Amino acid sequence: MSQTSAPASEVDEHASFIKTPQQLIVVVLLAFLVPIFGIALVLQMVVGGHHAEPESLSPEAVSARIQPVGRVEVVDANAPRVLRSGEEIVKITCSACHAAGVAGAPKIGDKAAWGQHAKEGLDHLLQSAIKGKGAMPPRGGLPDLSDLELARAIVYMANQSGMNLKEPAASADGTIASAAAAKPEGKKRK
Image: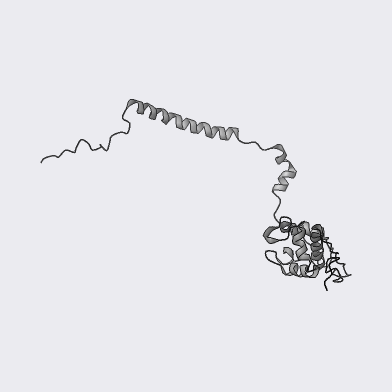
C-alpha cells in the first residue's frame, strides 16, 4: 500500500491559532484579566449599589406608591344623594381629556372651541355628553352622574373657557328644573 501525503499548504486540524510568543502572552494575560475584571464589576455592583433618597422612603411616599388602583366604597342605596358641583366632576373625570384636549375634546380655556360647541346650547351639549361623542364614553365614563351633575360640569368647563352659561337650577328631586339655561346669555337664537 502506498500512502498519499497531503499537500503542505493544508492546515493541520490540531494546529493552534497561537503562532508567536507574543500571541501566547496576550492570551494568557487576557485569560486572567478578563475574569478578574468581571468579578470586580459584579462586586462593585453588589457592594456599591444605589441608595434611595430619604424622602422616597417616608411612610407617605411609600403609601402613595403602593396605593391600590381602585377601591370599593359601600354606600347605602337608600341614603340621600349628595349632588357634586361642576368643578368636582371636572376634577374627577372630565379634566383627563379636556385639560389637554385629548382625542379632539375641546380644551378647557380654548374659547374658540367651546364657543363653537356652546352656540348649540347647553341642551345639545348635555345630550352629547349623556350619549357620548367620539372617544368620550357616555356620561364621561361615570355612569352614576346625574343629568344635573353632568350639566354643571359642562357649564363649569364652558365658563372656564370664556363662555357665559348659567348653571341649571336643581329641582327638589335633584334633576334639572328647567331648560331656561340652554343658550349662552346674550346669544339667543330666533
